[in-house]
Image (tube, rainbow, N blue to C red; front, side, top):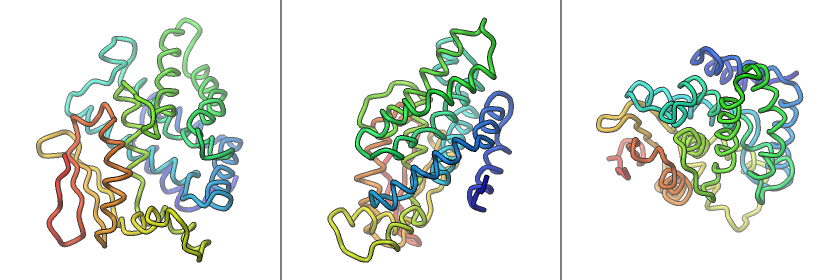
Length: 268
């Protein structure tokens, strides 16, 4: 099973951040050759057939890494996830759902862009059920159902076109949206030399230099978007901010964006 160097490095970073069920979940998904092939084909369809940016193994791991970073910042600040608040599961169970959803959310891109989140759910269910059956006994049916439901909600809501209500799903949504650095738009830009409608998305994405996620001063999470040109504000304001705005995690986020070496604009 071939994996790019970038993918391997991301997997190593993710695994170092995990313990317990969350670690076992990531290990199983990373080792699954069928899932690897599915993610790679989703990327082929996305880039070569549809002309979109990266929706493959690297993107799904970047989205996962971002979601884990934010989960840890919330956890360190004493913010409980929905499974904990509802007394159904632990933080580890919540993180397991976040990882499952983040690593499976774009499988539907192997078919088409339209409603791909709904297609992703159908394609993800066998992986979800296999992992949960490995992690839990038959006596833990309520917990399995809860993790499964949260995972599906995370996939269902990652396009910000459907209302979501859990912090777990909100982390998946923002983790996905925060993968917008210039490298993600590089391949479709190289493959296409002709101007076409919608190129503002590529141009603005190419201006994003770095998305930093760290502990905020007033709120648990600070997300800072650095760009090399003001066209990057389009990506922040038209693509990223609407995702944060609909996410249940919004109250815990400080959002800054701006051109490198200039004063940052605060959105939240």
